Image (cartoon, rainbow, N blue to C red; front, side, top):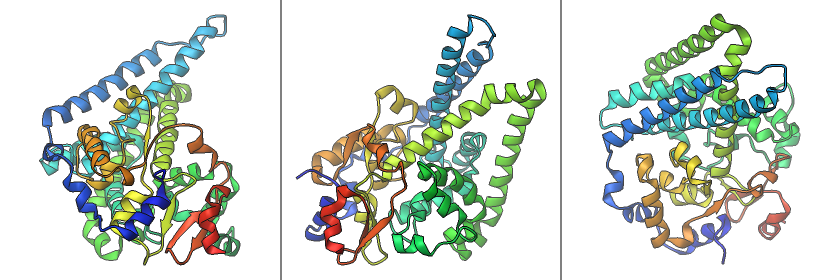
Length: 371
């Protein structure tokens, strides 16, 4: 039987496999932080961005026949610069998981360096992302874009005045991308709701410092570029690559936890194993891109052991797949991963199973249980 969310869910109900069992098959060395590799990764990414930005600076756009080679070259440079920025974000993600360095202050410093230029406040992102890991695919607790998905009955009860973001996400083509992008902003304003008042009060000072650091960084970058060369310089050198990074990051975030077969759980139907494995996917890209993105698309090992440094994910993936092949979902990226959310789907509950599925024709066999 092909491995997909429903088959893993079924196995989780008949077998006694626990999340710790998968973690235990990962070689011990995969949990070790290699400071040299961490720092080399940071310098590699920063050097790549610096080189590409320099090339962008010296690539003109002139209103003559030279435009025939200038425009494609500039577009290619923007694309790779944006992809390099995705790698910078993922390295900041490692810092948030305390996987860059053994020293907490180094994780914080490097995390701010990686996250702030990309409009992400490190501590705000970290506490909400930790919540995502603790409650992956658990409806009512998940903090990412999936929290906006509704059943048809729920959607019919929403109004534009009180639920504008949700309604617009359903109205727009590829509205899930809209939710991912708006969530970057919402995280800064809805932290207390997402992590609870008690933890929010404990983290208030760190959250404030993180937000101010991010705002100051963004103002410095965009303000300096605008001051030096105006709107076009700001867009050419940073705005357009930054937009490409945002869209690419949104794509990666989507396919890591969602395809047309994804399951979302009720509070009662959720377990740690189901949350981390049933709807978590490895979606593989060409090796060059995966290296640029610090292997984050090898995502299942990351959810089995979130504090594992990025450079061990491949080895951990091989170990988990060898020991538990029926619990591991991995596919090369294709248009199949995109077509299902051109129009944002509604959810349909399967009450006897304690989960929701996308109300799509591909899930007809599962939806039959809800009829």
